[in-house]
Length: 126
Image (tube, rainbow, N blue to C red; front, side, top):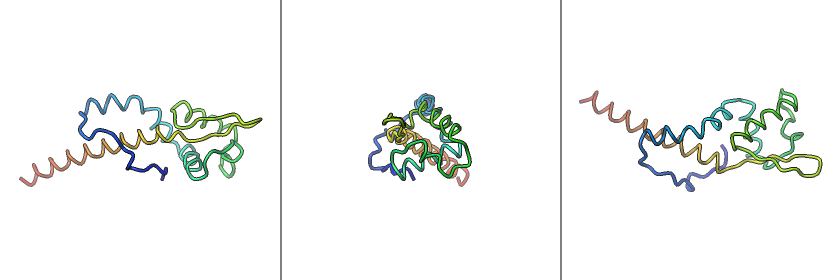
């Protein structure tokens, strides 16, 4: 969805649960930012169309440009996007590394759950 290839993943496969938990602290703002439907739409637009101005980002959304500006602020604070002033406009773009790290974290958690569920299955089946 975000155009991030899994081939560039370099996260270690065998990290402890406590290491994952401590690593998640830094990603709480990222996951919170991505937990909003409007922000997900903005991320998708930036991914699909590249850097965009607030005018282009807010086109067709059922919220005001002011609301979009607030959403962009949340995402910028989380490190998901950055803005560059070009003349009178500010152009926003994704920060793919932050998304890639969030994806790696989710993949690591998924692998841990798969391992735990497999152990439970073996235990139950005896």
